[in-house]
Image (cartoon, rainbow, N blue to C red):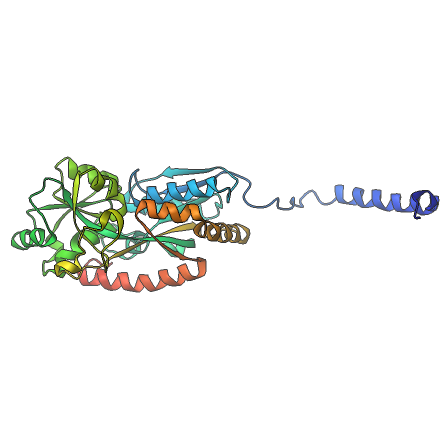
Length: 342
């Protein structure tokens, strides 16, 4: 049987000396040598919604952080921060120039990150190419909405009024002119033969503010994402005239006709995704790719998506980037048709 007492004293002493020498060598190594990585993340993570509270970005960010924390997929604290302004353009400028290496700050976005970079009015010099696209999470659709007591009962009655006098009705949305809610608002009119540049549109910071304007009588019609008006529809405060999906949605929107059903070929899909900084580290990117894949496959996330009235449509980082490149071309064509390209 092997026994430590049989080891030669000289051999033991030599081994001890080598061990101590190695420790001494490590401790006296160059003071400039950085400590080895302890693994990402080591700090709290901020997920920014570049809008006010209550809109699609805000709801997405809060659902995203809630499920990641609740399932323990991410152990570090996750907080949501609202940074409204210019339909996301104000935050994008700060993020691209001041947070380009901040691995602890992510943000959610949707088509405006493409649109704002391509449109003429209120153009943003920064877009998705100034980020690290991490994943597409969901898809949603546009909704044309009026107050519950509005005289307008269907989409065509609104469009006929606009065709007579494009400036008579005030349309509103939660994004800047030429951005997503604006495109949703005017797309049916454009498809109906109305000059979209003559339609009166007022912008607000986020879908929540646009709904408030509608309920307060400061707008006649709003164009926004369907999911952000779901609770108002259930409460009986609004009437949804049309959805920009190809087929009717299920659940709370099952009785709402599509624009296409009403003879207006106005389809618009709203994806939502998560982005990191342009110079995100490889370690951080790999961490989020793995974590988000776990998220979208979890029962808790699937239930949350259903509760919010979204549709799950996941694309990983590489597929998401490819999709964004393709959508950039599509959006450019739409803006050119509307005379809004830069």
